[in-house]
Image (cartoon, rainbow, N blue to C red; front, side, top):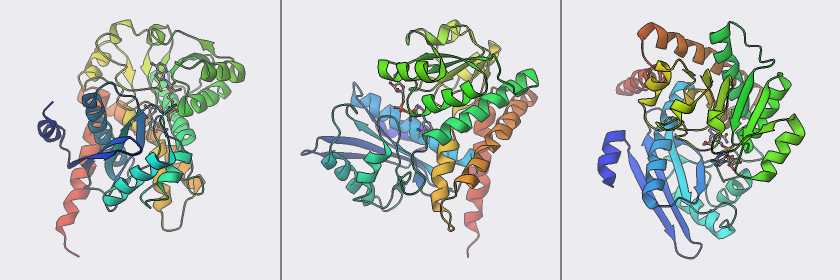
Length: 353
Ligand code: NAD
């Protein structure tokens, strides 16, 4: 892989490789764009099969964070960290503290938080070595429930756009991945009267949603192909791809996972198939809104965060309308919106104070 070429193509500022021989830490931090503010984004721990896979993931995830913060109206840039390790086996105090030291060495250009495979408890240990963390228990806490709430708001907005009603009674939603976000999303959907189809690779997680919300379990390899109204990817990215799209039997793709489209062009393929896609970096922006509240001079305020998260519905409706009016896929409409803000707010930096 040509790393600089990839950075050039995706317009990244910095890629940092971190290694600690004692704890076995192998981490990569991607800083995509700091025009709007310091690069904020969670750290993911995943047993990537190759280093290239991890690099591609961090490049894509950090770019997504730039668009997400821009679309959410936050004064933050985009960054992300990935740690090549198995979250069920490889965590240790030394590993998190070594990671914290590397984050600290960036002097605030990158602020980390939790992501897949990483919990607020882990981030608490990272905080022993650096202040550049967010999502701590004693501040905004785990962003996942707020991300789930934003995703729920987004699913309602998508149904409103299609049906003229956001009522989810009897609406069939398949939730792929019932981890931190997926579980909390199931809770909202269940309360709203939706019927749940769920898949996960861990049985304990599935048992919980069956027991708590009466969900029906579907094979993780074929959940995307089950007949439903809404397909909500809440596990890893790239589940909307050349193989899965022909098998989709939903009207809406609206979930919390980052980078749901394997490639940008898949937004257009969904459109041609008549499937409404709620762009991932907009519908899943609740978590970053919540975390960003920590930087408010008056301190973290959960009610204010939730109020802001509710605007995700309006943002999506604007994007759906722009997509129709401009005859472009929804992901492109969302990117244009984010890029416009980065350009316009970025340009004020020419005004010396
Ligand atoms: P998590 O690790 O708690 O949950 C992910 C779940 O997906 C796990 O239960 C895992 O077993 C399951 N899974 C993995 N591979 C699967 C497969 N092939 N089929 C079915 N299930 C599978 O992570 P999370 O925090 O809930 O995040 C879920 C997604 O949402 C990720 O893509 C993450 O980047 C994105 N996201 C999370 C937040 C947040 O606040 N946590 C914010 C924005 C976006």
